[in-house]
Image 1 (cartoon, rainbow, N blue to C red):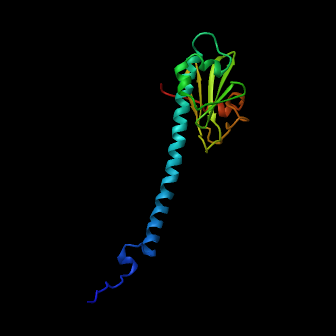
Image 2 (image 1 turned 90 degrees about the horizontal axis):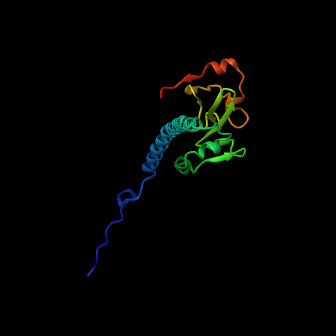
Image 3 (image 1 turned 135 degrees about the vertical axis):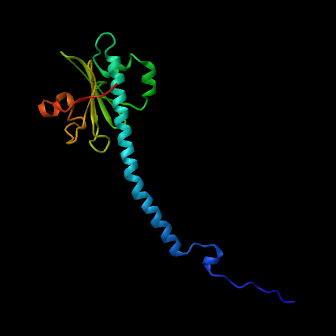
Length: 172
């Protein structure tokens, strides 16, 4: 008795991926990646800016309570629960600067009363806008040219009248 063998089928029939199918899937994947990455980056920048705005307001509220603090670290000690939630911060310059989610935060204490400033760690990479809190409320600055970015360029050290005129109050 003779057993009949089934004829061998081509690869595409057996379930293996044909090279043209693989190329189409790869092309679709590349298109999805190219469309998604810029949107993801924009989302991350908006989140960093939103977080900076909220933290400036909260730190400002804390700085206005009681005697004026001398550092941001001292300001944050006034709210232990907030300090616990901010476990991902990096303290710079002995507690004078705080870095979180792509932004730097600084307490400025001068004759005008305490102010909290926030600006991007790396302009256009971690954020664009700058924020500041004073007794008058929270203000934003577009910082389009990147005048304030990183440790070397702080809003508190700016004397440019045109740049200072671009600060706009934010609704509470």
